[in-house]
Image (cartoon, rainbow, N blue to C red; front, side, top):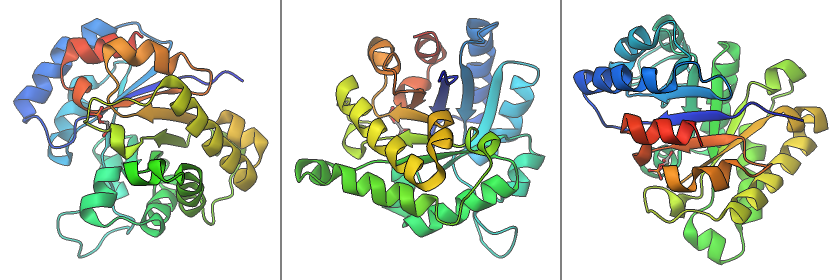
Length: 252
Ligand code: PGA
């Protein structure tokens, strides 16, 4: 089954609105007419309306790095799914390891956010991945299975919907460290994740679901990683901050 790759830029807490505008101005011409892959930018919430406006009519989608699971309410500092879609955002990251590590996000919270995103027609990118200690003690498979099972609790969907759900495998030891998983290590983890999705949602859904790799993806390793049959795109942090470097990854 051929799955259209998604190449996503996680800008984390970088860029002002002027810097984001300058990025988009330079980046759009570099990827104009590129239809082989889907492209999406994930700026901070305060930048989102400006980036949406700058990308309007282009082949580049815009999403949030996080949403809250509640519809609305007294949740100071949070962004709702409705606020995201009203601002023109179409995607959201869910459960990025930095959210899990610094903001206490659990598999249960990830699951609630997934339900909320699906209810609002937002494309979710569910992030999973083991920390170094878990990999070194042989726990990678069980950690991934627990995270995937937790994320999908209570989710049973038609194939059209599951094909819009995206998982990003991001080994925590590879994020921002310059230490990339080898294409073989990544593909192995992707097979574990896909097998788990198959158990939970059926083999058709598993075959349609895109699984991205994230963790120190750069222009010089993108081809080897995304070229793997099992790897359906990339979630890119550091190397997505410069237009030429992110465009080079898009064109792996
Ligand atoms: P990195 O970040 O590419 O800088 O390793 C990836 C991520 O955190 O999504």
